[in-house]
Image (cartoon, rainbow, N blue to C red; front, side, top):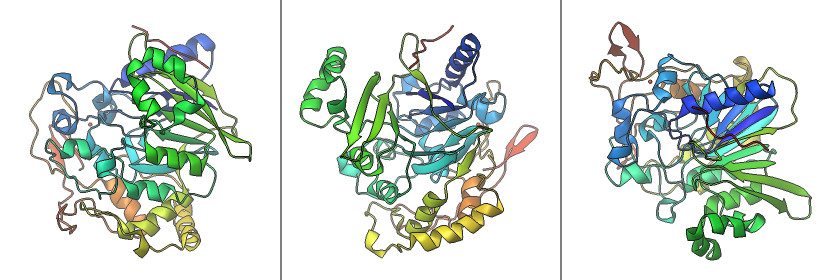
Length: 401
Protein backbone atom coordinates (compact mmCIF):
# COMPACT_ATOMS: atom_id res chain seq x y z
CA UNK A 1 0.00 0.00 0.00
CA UNK A 2 1.33 3.43 -0.95
CA UNK A 3 0.64 6.04 1.71
CA UNK A 4 1.25 9.78 1.42
CA UNK A 5 1.98 11.55 4.70
CA UNK A 6 1.45 15.30 4.88
CA UNK A 7 2.52 17.66 7.67
CA UNK A 8 0.34 20.74 8.30
CA UNK A 9 -2.39 21.13 5.67
CA UNK A 10 -3.47 24.69 6.56
CA UNK A 11 -6.51 24.27 4.31
CA UNK A 12 -4.45 23.90 1.13
CA UNK A 13 -6.10 20.69 -0.08
CA UNK A 14 -5.99 21.61 -3.76
CA UNK A 15 -2.21 21.89 -3.88
CA UNK A 16 -1.59 18.78 -1.79
CA UNK A 17 -3.81 16.66 -4.02
CA UNK A 18 -2.22 18.15 -7.15
CA UNK A 19 1.21 17.28 -5.81
CA UNK A 20 0.15 13.69 -5.16
CA UNK A 21 -1.36 13.42 -8.62
CA UNK A 22 1.86 14.76 -10.18
CA UNK A 23 3.84 12.11 -8.29
CA UNK A 24 1.45 9.43 -9.54
CA UNK A 25 1.86 10.58 -13.13
CA UNK A 26 5.65 10.80 -13.22
CA UNK A 27 6.13 7.51 -11.34
CA UNK A 28 3.23 5.65 -12.99
CA UNK A 29 1.85 4.63 -9.62
CA UNK A 30 -1.22 5.09 -7.44
CA UNK A 31 -1.31 6.48 -3.90
CA UNK A 32 -3.84 4.57 -1.81
CA UNK A 33 -4.17 6.85 1.23
CA UNK A 34 -3.28 10.35 2.45
CA UNK A 35 -2.61 10.95 6.16
CA UNK A 36 -2.58 14.53 7.45
CA UNK A 37 -0.98 15.31 10.81
CA UNK A 38 -3.08 18.30 11.80
CA UNK A 39 -3.81 21.98 11.14
CA UNK A 40 -6.18 20.64 8.51
CA UNK A 41 -8.50 23.66 8.69
CA UNK A 42 -11.81 22.11 7.70
CA UNK A 43 -13.41 25.54 7.22
CA UNK A 44 -16.83 25.14 5.60
CA UNK A 45 -17.95 28.78 5.46
CA UNK A 46 -17.11 32.23 6.81
CA UNK A 47 -18.76 31.56 10.17
CA UNK A 48 -16.34 28.66 10.82
CA UNK A 49 -13.45 31.12 10.73
CA UNK A 50 -14.71 32.56 14.02
CA UNK A 51 -13.56 29.27 15.59
CA UNK A 52 -10.16 29.25 13.87
CA UNK A 53 -7.33 30.25 16.20
CA UNK A 54 -5.21 32.35 13.83
CA UNK A 55 -4.63 36.12 13.59
CA UNK A 56 -7.49 37.73 11.67
CA UNK A 57 -5.15 38.77 8.85
CA UNK A 58 -4.42 35.08 8.15
CA UNK A 59 -8.06 33.99 8.09
CA UNK A 60 -9.05 32.92 4.60
CA UNK A 61 -11.33 30.30 3.13
CA UNK A 62 -8.61 28.22 1.43
CA UNK A 63 -10.01 25.18 -0.38
CA UNK A 64 -11.67 22.72 2.04
CA UNK A 65 -15.13 24.25 1.45
CA UNK A 66 -15.10 22.97 -2.13
CA UNK A 67 -14.76 19.38 -0.88
CA UNK A 68 -17.38 19.89 1.83
CA UNK A 69 -19.85 21.31 -0.70
CA UNK A 70 -19.26 18.50 -3.19
CA UNK A 71 -17.83 20.83 -5.82
CA UNK A 72 -14.64 18.75 -5.56
CA UNK A 73 -14.05 15.20 -4.29
CA UNK A 74 -10.79 14.13 -2.69
CA UNK A 75 -8.98 11.99 -5.31
CA UNK A 76 -7.26 10.01 -2.54
CA UNK A 77 -8.91 8.63 0.63
CA UNK A 78 -7.80 11.04 3.36
CA UNK A 79 -7.55 10.60 7.13
CA UNK A 80 -6.64 13.55 9.35
CA UNK A 81 -6.27 14.63 12.96
CA UNK A 82 -6.70 18.11 14.43
CA UNK A 83 -3.90 20.49 15.35
CA UNK A 84 -3.89 23.96 16.88
CA UNK A 85 -5.30 25.83 13.87
CA UNK A 86 -8.69 24.26 13.21
CA UNK A 87 -12.36 25.04 12.68
CA UNK A 88 -12.87 23.73 16.19
CA UNK A 89 -16.65 24.12 16.07
CA UNK A 90 -16.84 21.60 13.21
CA UNK A 91 -14.40 19.14 14.77
CA UNK A 92 -16.44 19.20 17.99
CA UNK A 93 -19.48 18.00 15.99
CA UNK A 94 -17.31 15.02 15.01
CA UNK A 95 -15.67 14.47 18.41
CA UNK A 96 -15.87 10.68 17.98
CA UNK A 97 -14.64 10.86 14.37
CA UNK A 98 -16.46 10.90 11.06
CA UNK A 99 -16.50 12.11 7.49
CA UNK A 100 -15.65 15.83 7.32
CA UNK A 101 -16.30 15.65 3.57
CA UNK A 102 -16.71 12.87 1.04
CA UNK A 103 -13.57 10.68 1.17
CA UNK A 104 -12.05 12.83 3.97
CA UNK A 105 -12.23 11.23 7.43
CA UNK A 106 -11.52 12.95 10.76
CA UNK A 107 -10.13 10.53 13.38
CA UNK A 108 -11.79 12.47 16.18
CA UNK A 109 -10.21 14.03 19.25
CA UNK A 110 -8.74 10.55 19.70
CA UNK A 111 -9.51 7.58 17.53
CA UNK A 112 -8.59 4.38 15.76
CA UNK A 113 -9.83 3.08 12.40
CA UNK A 114 -8.86 0.35 9.99
CA UNK A 115 -7.84 0.94 6.39
CA UNK A 116 -7.44 -2.36 4.62
CA UNK A 117 -5.64 -4.50 7.18
CA UNK A 118 -3.77 -1.49 8.62
CA UNK A 119 -4.77 -0.12 12.00
CA UNK A 120 -4.39 3.66 12.27
CA UNK A 121 -4.71 5.67 15.49
CA UNK A 122 -4.37 9.32 16.31
CA UNK A 123 -4.58 12.09 18.90
CA UNK A 124 -5.74 15.58 17.93
CA UNK A 125 -4.51 18.86 19.39
CA UNK A 126 -1.35 19.93 21.20
CA UNK A 127 -0.23 19.47 24.80
CA UNK A 128 -0.49 22.24 27.39
CA UNK A 129 0.02 21.09 30.96
CA UNK A 130 -2.39 23.61 32.49
CA UNK A 131 -5.37 22.17 30.57
CA UNK A 132 -4.39 18.51 30.42
CA UNK A 133 -6.53 17.25 33.30
CA UNK A 134 -9.50 19.51 32.53
CA UNK A 135 -12.64 18.19 30.94
CA UNK A 136 -13.89 19.29 27.53
CA UNK A 137 -15.66 22.42 28.75
CA UNK A 138 -15.28 24.61 25.66
CA UNK A 139 -18.34 25.31 23.47
CA UNK A 140 -18.80 27.62 20.52
CA UNK A 141 -18.93 30.55 20.26
CA UNK A 142 -15.43 30.58 21.74
CA UNK A 143 -13.86 33.49 23.60
CA UNK A 144 -10.20 34.53 23.48
CA UNK A 145 -9.32 31.83 26.00
CA UNK A 146 -11.44 28.87 24.89
CA UNK A 147 -10.59 29.31 21.20
CA UNK A 148 -7.11 28.14 22.25
CA UNK A 149 -7.82 25.72 25.07
CA UNK A 150 -10.33 23.79 22.93
CA UNK A 151 -7.46 22.19 20.99
CA UNK A 152 -5.37 21.29 24.04
CA UNK A 153 -4.97 17.55 24.56
CA UNK A 154 -6.97 16.10 27.47
CA UNK A 155 -6.11 13.28 29.85
CA UNK A 156 -9.46 11.63 29.16
CA UNK A 157 -8.68 11.05 25.48
CA UNK A 158 -5.13 9.89 26.21
CA UNK A 159 -6.38 7.50 28.91
CA UNK A 160 -8.73 5.88 26.42
CA UNK A 161 -5.88 5.38 23.94
CA UNK A 162 -3.75 3.88 26.71
CA UNK A 163 -6.30 1.06 27.03
CA UNK A 164 -5.49 -0.26 23.54
CA UNK A 165 -3.96 -3.73 23.55
CA UNK A 166 -4.02 -4.80 19.92
CA UNK A 167 -1.04 -3.66 17.77
CA UNK A 168 -1.17 -0.37 15.87
CA UNK A 169 0.51 0.09 12.52
CA UNK A 170 0.39 3.89 12.38
CA UNK A 171 -0.17 6.66 14.91
CA UNK A 172 -0.67 10.36 14.17
CA UNK A 173 -0.07 13.28 16.54
CA UNK A 174 0.22 16.97 15.78
CA UNK A 175 3.03 17.84 18.19
CA UNK A 176 6.01 15.52 18.60
CA UNK A 177 6.45 13.07 21.49
CA UNK A 178 8.77 14.76 23.97
CA UNK A 179 12.27 13.24 23.81
CA UNK A 180 11.92 12.02 20.22
CA UNK A 181 14.92 14.16 19.24
CA UNK A 182 17.14 11.74 21.23
CA UNK A 183 16.54 9.14 18.53
CA UNK A 184 17.37 11.22 15.44
CA UNK A 185 19.85 13.80 14.17
CA UNK A 186 19.22 16.49 16.77
CA UNK A 187 22.41 18.35 15.85
CA UNK A 188 21.24 19.04 12.29
CA UNK A 189 17.77 19.92 13.60
CA UNK A 190 19.27 22.55 15.93
CA UNK A 191 21.33 23.96 13.06
CA UNK A 192 18.10 24.43 11.11
CA UNK A 193 16.06 25.59 14.10
CA UNK A 194 18.48 27.08 16.70
CA UNK A 195 15.62 28.16 18.97
CA UNK A 196 14.78 24.48 19.57
CA UNK A 197 18.03 23.89 21.47
CA UNK A 198 16.89 25.14 24.87
CA UNK A 199 13.70 23.08 24.81
CA UNK A 200 15.52 19.98 23.55
CA UNK A 201 18.07 20.21 26.36
CA UNK A 202 15.32 20.84 28.93
CA UNK A 203 13.26 17.91 27.57
CA UNK A 204 10.28 20.19 26.97
CA UNK A 205 10.13 20.12 23.16
CA UNK A 206 6.99 18.16 22.45
CA UNK A 207 4.18 16.36 24.22
CA UNK A 208 4.51 14.27 27.38
CA UNK A 209 1.27 12.35 26.75
CA UNK A 210 2.42 11.55 23.21
CA UNK A 211 5.65 10.13 24.64
CA UNK A 212 3.62 7.97 27.04
CA UNK A 213 1.51 6.70 24.16
CA UNK A 214 4.62 5.97 22.08
CA UNK A 215 6.06 3.89 24.90
CA UNK A 216 2.80 2.00 25.50
CA UNK A 217 1.48 1.49 21.96
CA UNK A 218 4.76 0.95 20.06
CA UNK A 219 3.29 1.51 16.59
CA UNK A 220 5.34 0.64 13.52
CA UNK A 221 5.13 4.25 12.32
CA UNK A 222 4.47 7.56 14.06
CA UNK A 223 3.86 10.73 12.03
CA UNK A 224 3.72 14.33 13.33
CA UNK A 225 3.83 17.94 12.16
CA UNK A 226 3.45 21.25 14.07
CA UNK A 227 7.10 22.43 14.16
CA UNK A 228 7.26 23.10 10.41
CA UNK A 229 10.34 21.05 9.62
CA UNK A 230 11.27 17.55 8.53
CA UNK A 231 12.77 15.26 11.16
CA UNK A 232 13.19 11.48 11.19
CA UNK A 233 13.98 9.14 14.07
CA UNK A 234 13.86 5.45 14.99
CA UNK A 235 12.83 4.40 18.49
CA UNK A 236 13.76 0.91 19.66
CA UNK A 237 11.47 -0.38 22.39
CA UNK A 238 13.20 -2.38 25.12
CA UNK A 239 14.53 -5.81 24.28
CA UNK A 240 11.65 -7.09 22.14
CA UNK A 241 13.23 -5.74 18.98
CA UNK A 242 10.22 -3.62 17.99
CA UNK A 243 11.01 -0.26 16.39
CA UNK A 244 8.87 2.79 15.72
CA UNK A 245 9.88 4.81 12.67
CA UNK A 246 9.11 8.48 13.38
CA UNK A 247 8.72 11.20 10.78
CA UNK A 248 7.68 14.84 11.16
CA UNK A 249 6.97 17.00 8.12
CA UNK A 250 6.59 20.68 7.25
CA UNK A 251 3.53 22.70 6.27
CA UNK A 252 2.31 22.78 2.68
CA UNK A 253 4.13 25.41 0.64
CA UNK A 254 6.66 25.98 -2.15
CA UNK A 255 10.05 24.53 -1.26
CA UNK A 256 8.73 22.91 1.92
CA UNK A 257 9.29 19.26 2.80
CA UNK A 258 5.64 18.68 3.49
CA UNK A 259 4.90 15.38 1.77
CA UNK A 260 6.39 11.89 1.95
CA UNK A 261 5.36 8.73 0.10
CA UNK A 262 5.99 5.37 1.77
CA UNK A 263 5.22 1.74 0.96
CA UNK A 264 3.72 -0.45 3.67
CA UNK A 265 3.07 -4.15 3.20
CA UNK A 266 -0.63 -4.92 3.28
CA UNK A 267 -3.25 -7.19 1.90
CA UNK A 268 -4.40 -6.36 -1.64
CA UNK A 269 -7.16 -3.78 -2.01
CA UNK A 270 -9.67 -2.35 -2.50
CA UNK A 271 -9.24 -0.38 0.71
CA UNK A 272 -11.77 1.61 2.73
CA UNK A 273 -12.05 3.28 6.13
CA UNK A 274 -13.76 1.00 8.65
CA UNK A 275 -14.66 1.28 12.33
CA UNK A 276 -12.30 -0.40 14.81
CA UNK A 277 -13.99 -2.83 17.18
CA UNK A 278 -11.58 -2.48 20.12
CA UNK A 279 -11.61 1.31 19.99
CA UNK A 280 -15.40 1.58 19.93
CA UNK A 281 -15.61 -0.86 22.84
CA UNK A 282 -13.26 1.40 24.82
CA UNK A 283 -15.31 4.43 23.78
CA UNK A 284 -18.47 2.71 24.98
CA UNK A 285 -16.97 1.81 28.36
CA UNK A 286 -15.55 5.27 29.07
CA UNK A 287 -18.38 7.46 27.77
CA UNK A 288 -20.03 7.35 31.21
CA UNK A 289 -17.13 9.44 32.61
CA UNK A 290 -16.82 11.79 29.61
CA UNK A 291 -15.84 15.07 31.37
CA UNK A 292 -17.84 17.97 29.91
CA UNK A 293 -17.00 20.68 32.45
CA UNK A 294 -13.61 21.87 33.70
CA UNK A 295 -13.61 19.09 36.27
CA UNK A 296 -11.32 16.17 35.33
CA UNK A 297 -12.65 12.72 34.57
CA UNK A 298 -13.09 10.23 37.41
CA UNK A 299 -11.79 7.04 35.84
CA UNK A 300 -12.44 4.96 38.94
CA UNK A 301 -16.17 4.95 38.19
CA UNK A 302 -15.76 3.73 34.59
CA UNK A 303 -16.78 0.15 33.83
CA UNK A 304 -13.83 -1.89 32.61
CA UNK A 305 -15.24 -5.05 31.00
CA UNK A 306 -13.75 -4.25 27.59
CA UNK A 307 -13.99 -7.84 26.34
CA UNK A 308 -17.71 -8.11 27.00
CA UNK A 309 -18.20 -4.70 25.40
CA UNK A 310 -16.19 -5.83 22.36
CA UNK A 311 -18.49 -8.77 21.77
CA UNK A 312 -21.52 -6.47 21.98
CA UNK A 313 -19.92 -3.89 19.66
CA UNK A 314 -18.84 -6.54 17.17
CA UNK A 315 -22.42 -7.72 16.67
CA UNK A 316 -23.56 -4.14 16.09
CA UNK A 317 -20.76 -3.39 13.63
CA UNK A 318 -21.28 -6.59 11.69
CA UNK A 319 -24.80 -5.39 10.89
CA UNK A 320 -23.30 -2.53 8.86
CA UNK A 321 -20.08 -4.31 7.78
CA UNK A 322 -18.02 -2.01 10.05
CA UNK A 323 -18.63 0.94 7.70
CA UNK A 324 -18.81 4.48 9.15
CA UNK A 325 -22.06 6.37 8.79
CA UNK A 326 -22.41 8.53 5.69
CA UNK A 327 -21.25 12.13 5.52
CA UNK A 328 -24.02 14.72 6.03
CA UNK A 329 -23.66 18.49 5.70
CA UNK A 330 -24.75 20.29 8.84
CA UNK A 331 -24.29 23.91 7.72
CA UNK A 332 -24.25 25.66 4.34
CA UNK A 333 -20.99 25.63 2.41
CA UNK A 334 -19.23 28.85 1.48
CA UNK A 335 -20.70 30.50 -1.59
CA UNK A 336 -18.49 33.22 -3.14
CA UNK A 337 -21.54 34.93 -4.63
CA UNK A 338 -23.67 34.80 -1.47
CA UNK A 339 -21.97 35.89 1.76
CA UNK A 340 -24.97 36.00 4.12
CA UNK A 341 -26.25 32.87 5.85
CA UNK A 342 -29.44 32.19 7.75
CA UNK A 343 -29.00 31.77 11.52
CA UNK A 344 -27.71 28.29 12.39
CA UNK A 345 -27.16 26.51 15.73
CA UNK A 346 -23.77 27.02 17.35
CA UNK A 347 -23.51 23.28 18.02
CA UNK A 348 -25.61 21.45 15.43
CA UNK A 349 -26.01 17.75 16.08
CA UNK A 350 -24.09 15.94 13.37
CA UNK A 351 -26.17 12.98 12.14
CA UNK A 352 -23.02 10.86 11.86
CA UNK A 353 -22.29 11.38 15.55
CA UNK A 354 -25.91 10.81 16.56
CA UNK A 355 -26.06 7.58 14.53
CA UNK A 356 -22.78 6.25 15.94
CA UNK A 357 -23.90 6.93 19.50
CA UNK A 358 -27.24 5.25 18.84
CA UNK A 359 -25.37 2.24 17.44
CA UNK A 360 -23.28 2.07 20.63
CA UNK A 361 -26.28 2.65 22.89
CA UNK A 362 -24.83 5.92 24.20
CA UNK A 363 -26.43 9.32 24.91
CA UNK A 364 -25.56 12.42 22.90
CA UNK A 365 -23.65 14.76 25.24
CA UNK A 366 -21.78 17.24 23.03
CA UNK A 367 -24.28 20.03 23.66
CA UNK A 368 -24.05 19.66 27.46
CA UNK A 369 -23.62 22.78 29.57
CA UNK A 370 -19.92 23.52 30.23
CA UNK A 371 -20.92 24.61 33.74
CA UNK A 372 -23.35 21.92 34.90
CA UNK A 373 -22.68 19.19 32.36
CA UNK A 374 -26.42 18.93 31.65
CA UNK A 375 -27.88 18.85 28.14
CA UNK A 376 -28.96 22.12 26.52
CA UNK A 377 -31.00 20.29 23.86
CA UNK A 378 -30.11 22.16 20.67
CA UNK A 379 -32.32 20.90 17.82
CA UNK A 380 -30.88 19.31 14.69
CA UNK A 381 -32.81 21.33 12.13
CA UNK A 382 -32.45 21.77 8.35
CA UNK A 383 -30.86 24.96 7.09
CA UNK A 384 -31.92 26.51 3.82
CA UNK A 385 -29.25 27.37 1.25
CA UNK A 386 -30.88 28.84 -1.83
CA UNK A 387 -32.65 26.05 -3.74
CA UNK A 388 -30.96 23.34 -1.68
CA UNK A 389 -31.62 22.14 1.83
CA UNK A 390 -28.84 20.62 3.94
CA UNK A 391 -28.77 19.14 7.42
CA UNK A 392 -27.12 20.28 10.68
CA UNK A 393 -19.23 23.00 3.68
CA UNK A 394 2.34 25.81 -9.77
CA UNK A 395 3.86 22.46 -8.48
CA UNK A 396 5.05 22.18 -4.89
CA UNK A 397 8.13 20.45 -3.50
CA UNK A 398 7.74 16.68 -3.09
CA UNK A 399 10.11 14.73 -0.88
CA UNK A 400 10.08 10.94 -1.33
CA UNK A 401 11.57 8.25 0.85
